[in-house]
Length: 75
Image 1 (cartoon, rainbow, N blue to C red):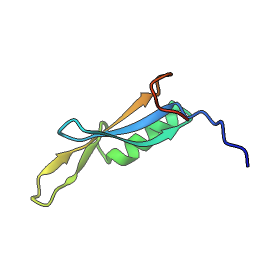
Image 2: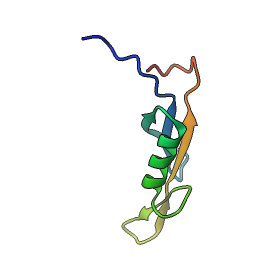
Image 3: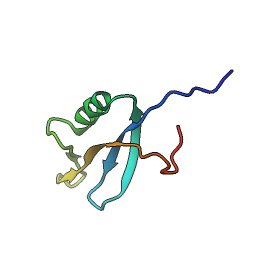
């Protein structure tokens, strides 16, 4: 089997209240990435999170970013 050379330059990043960032997925188009970020973020654009165990809302932000060439992240 040959390796796929599909380019997925758009990423959805989850950022928690402490500033920690996690890559959620990679997408071919910005529209796909934005759609996923909105779905993950719930009703509020920008990504409000679900309530925690203590009932307080935990802020989770889903950001859309383009992969930078030469950034050490390979397709």
